Image 1 (cartoon, rainbow, N blue to C red):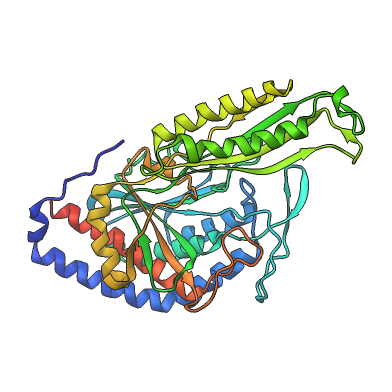
Image 2 (cartoon, rainbow, N blue to C red; image 1 turned 120 degrees about the vertical axis):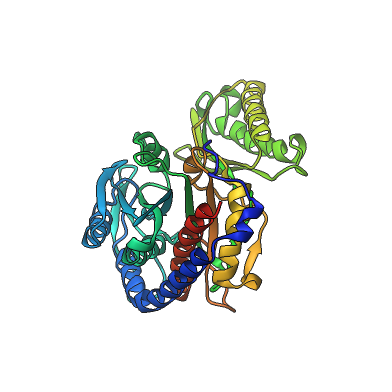
Length: 434
């Protein structure tokens, strides 16, 4: 992993007065422009919400984003990792390269929210036509970063460094048989030419009140791996199960047995871990024992050693449980996302910025969560900071991300714009003061 340009030296206490004064002036401009652009950012968000697109299919989204960035006079690349858009803003003074990332894809979810910009869009997912909804808030991320790009471009001559705006497709995962997302963007060189020094990303959160920011150093989100299990038995009449080998009973025992991995095999005082079966398919009617059962699940881990142990135990339990019933089980653990890991040094350096923007009383150090984010692929290459911005109307009950009733209070978008813009300004200034 690339190292920070500098450690946390005492020299930061003695930043030249002219640099501090200039930074203060730019922050005043950021606040003013964030106020003025708030309605436009909301308008962009509503457009993307009403016109969502699935992973690797963000064609219209990318077009709208690229047109805006081009209108700002930025150097823009399109078609990165299929539909990604990258823009480069070179400041008027030399300095580090800071990347800012927003994800663009939506989910195969039917929206139930009663808003004027409700999605009625359709898309193709795994060969089927499905409803499409921005049920995770990526529409807000796009709009926020478009606003940040406009504000920072307007102060281009005063920037002591370069900003790379990364609008990423397929954070929710590429379609089956395709590559995509942050991993493919990294492979295609998005962090090169010029080389990125640090990267910042945010996620709106429907369970955090508007005006608040949540963060933690080191692992903030879990590594994720999906897996599939195919249980093969012998078909028989349901009235004579002894003449066959029942894959449904075997699958049921496998599901129960793998729950002991977390509860009995992992040191849970170290970190959390989760194993969940999310789907199971088998059989066609009540009186036929089928020949095969298919299951899929997800694994979430926050410790590399625990992850390997979980994989090992999963293989043992699946194989031996099937064999004990005379069946065969085939396990396939798919490649996933690594831990979303906030560089401790970078986090310590930039938390004061978040506290200044939101107010120290509104910035919370949180426990790690078992959700996952492919922003982690960027963090494997360069130091990164990923944080959450509140999108919940105070006093309401959130529906939850990835649900039909997912709702974001748009009053939270302006804080996202101010936070990302100020992180850039402060990182540039602290680099100049090293």
